[in-house]
Length: 377
Ligand SMILES: [Mg+2]
Image (tube, rainbow, N blue to C red; front, side):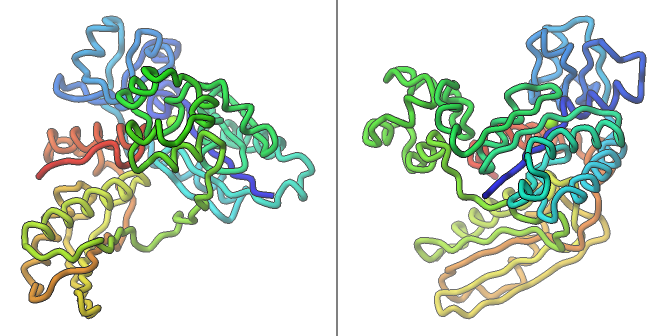
């Protein structure tokens, strides 16, 4: 039987700060830069009572919560704790897919035979995390990724939610539709207008009614509403490179088209790299032409990159090294020679505006899925 576990630390950055600084405990705390232009990265549960949440501008958070304590964060310390967590995950499963600095999917399929009751593994991993890091995590255990992530989010903080294959559909039916990733504010409102409030109603609705609202995602979203999600847990923990390639429905003919496509790919790769707290020194561009001939060019820099703009700047250099004589069928961008990003991620001095913009966009993507937002150049 398939079992996926999703582990997610509770208010991660804020909890680390409260752990290391006893004077912050029990108080509303916001991590996310002291500057007025910044956004909230994480806030403590005390702060959430004031209505503050991730990706909110600091200025707004200050207005909502005057007694809040604002700190700029220590990415190096968070990466250190993250690495402790990843070690624990490896004790529980050979197949771990980190989603961000403080959460991961673990494939536990078949392990119920070893432990008798899969619930035990959920309890055990929470205990191990508490013991090693001093922090609490919330855990969801379910037959697939969607249900596991939904489960870990349901009883935060310090939650443990098991959704089994036979009760999945009934379990999620009464929940509001915005628990499904990809259903943002707009789609949620549109669904409400046609009387769809719960996941159960969404699951039962005729596909034709949903097409107008959900478009191409209709089948995917409706499958999720029925508790179906076949995406495998991808073991990316030990990745040597992180990349993304796309074969285009129509060959790309103009310089503008492939520039845009490569900017798109750079953003997708940047997000993935930042999500697991890495940066890379080598950027590789792959081009496959209509004739199926392909070329690959790489460039290596002194300073590791992870920002969309930095990755794309290197891609642009590579664009100049390639003859674009033929229509393009496939493009790929990847980042390799990976190193832990550490303080680099909070190196605001370098380009504060860019860093914070990326952080805000990443927070949105992590919450609602990668396709929630696309940036122009
Ligand atoms: Mg978390």
